[in-house]
Length: 222
Picture 1 (cartoon, one colour):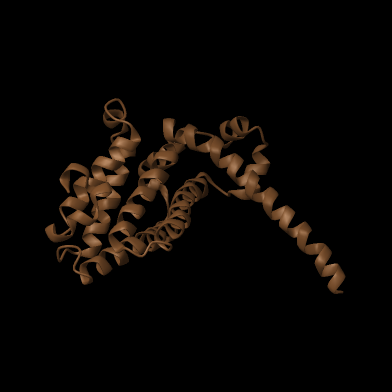
Picture 2: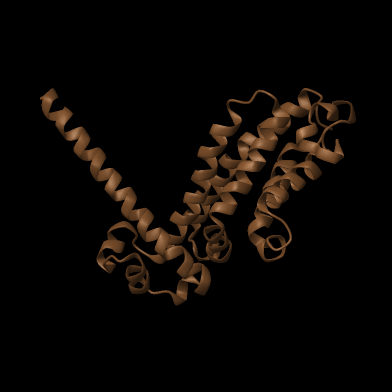
């Protein structure tokens, strides 16, 4: 029996990998169509044609366009959570944790800009259960940043600011790369946007006596 289990495990892993690949293939096709035209105007057949799969295959993974939209939103938040763990956990300095978390938010939003814009446009199409799932994911995603702000305040590195408010301010600014991409992109590179916003936001929070520790983050505002 153990030998049978050992043989089944790789098969299940392969099936799961194929399923994940199919889901990603469908979502990659659906996002630009729905972001451009709105989900009500996009048929499942159009998504199937773009993904080069059958409509029946789409329905194996997603029962409705609402489920597609929710999967897109959850995918962006899952990417943020995964990258935040990779960025924040190895770093001990809470101010650098904040800067790293902000960079992660901005990077995911840059790399998933169409998905982010679709989320803004279509979040009202989710049912109450779907919105609840997304809200819970967002709260968990912001938590590492809020915790880093709290720690930095406790260590006397930051002014006594409201941790949740500052964390959401940072997240909102990160989203501006998607929301105001039409304005920022012709005027600066993403790296310039990230560097300037990091310096501006942290300069308002870091206590003057500690600014000398972060010249790489604050630039001319150190």
